[in-house]
Length: 260
Length: 107
Image (cartoon, rainbow over all chains, first blue to last red; front, side):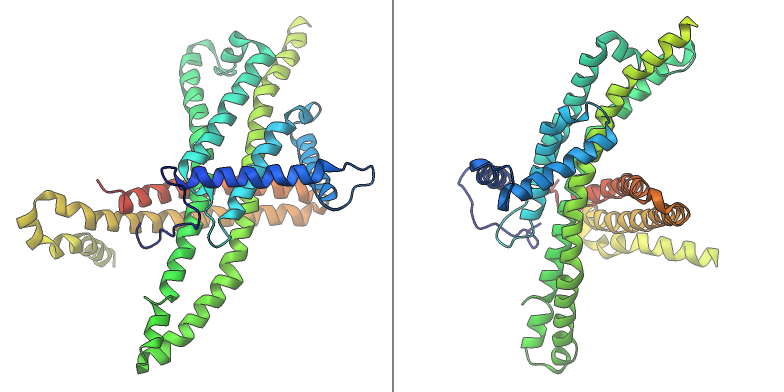
């Protein structure tokens, strides 16, 4: 990965880059929150207005997906969403690195989600009923099989959550790095600067086309992907929480039906 | 036609082996891993990307159909579509991770 590894500006000795830039993302979020809440006003202006708009969006999605009582999970969902969005966008600033382009960061987020939704499910309905629901609504003989399959599918969730975010971010970075490499001094631009006929004929227009392609298409696409992946991460977290909660409602629905 | 295709595929698979046959005789079996890893990464990622394109195309097409039928439900359909696309895409990203491991992790 030597060619496409672009070292960020700030490197602390002995500390991996993604940890440093996680701290920077935290710093950005803390400063923005501080500025937004420093002078709270009934009629918000400036940063406070912006942050209230963002939180309104979170509230709206929470109400839509989890329903009543969904706003309890705003601290988790909002923190995850804002942190992931900030980290994703930091990768697009030259000289900064994106913490989410490292598997360790995304795996940490995914493991938090994994344990949280299980804890929410267990607290909602107790250990034994929660475990029973893994077996699903199948006849008794098939229950052990379903149980194993469900456990495996639940274990696959943090894997796919972390790999999806990591793959999108790292893939985008590699793509842009390859394009920069291709049109840089080792590639088309270098060819054009040698002054040879082929360089003038192909290298010079090629550089312009590649630069236009990167600026006009790849970077907007990466901004879109940054927002989309943060949204998808939050959405899946909410769906997993809903799954852990809904099983309790299922039980409640079944119980009166049994009495009739 | 089919025989030609098979022959072409076999040739493609054999090329890195032929290219490094001389080196392999001197360097041992480890020399064979790198070219085949590059081949596997390229072919595998190509397959994954192409089939992911087919799947995502179907999903997006159906979503647009649904939106045209029920313009009132556009938001919900869009959310469902984005989630579905993310699930389809994540399979490709698994292949991407495997390709990166094949290409860049020194064994």
